[in-house]
Structures are given as structure tokens and as C-alpha cells.
Length: 69
Image (cartoon, rainbow, N blue to C red; front, side, top):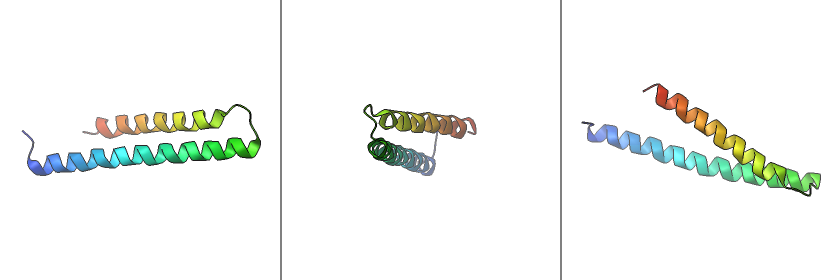
């Protein structure tokens, strides 16, 4: 059984990951939108591609972080 301190640390770790996910996705969407507008692209490719790359990178990060434990 986990101690309350370990549960608290785990909660903080997941809260940090959730915040990181939301912030990086928002930045990726904004940067993709900005680049698409700057290049006058008719189909907003980077608005879709950059967040997808961020999600892939964060999944790899989660796998690496959880394989240590």
C-alpha cells in the first residue's frame, strides 16, 4: 500500500503532465496556425501536424518515464 506522501507526489506528477500537455498543444496549434497564415497555405497542414508531433513526443516521454519505475 502506498503512503499518503507517495500518492501526493504521484498526483503532482500527473497534474504537471496534464498542464504540460495542454500548454504544449496550445503552443503547437498557435505556431502551426501562425506559420500557415504566414505562408498563405490554403489547407492548414501545420495546424494538424505540429500538435500530432507533440502528442507523439509526449507519449514517448510517458513511456520513458514510466519504464523507469
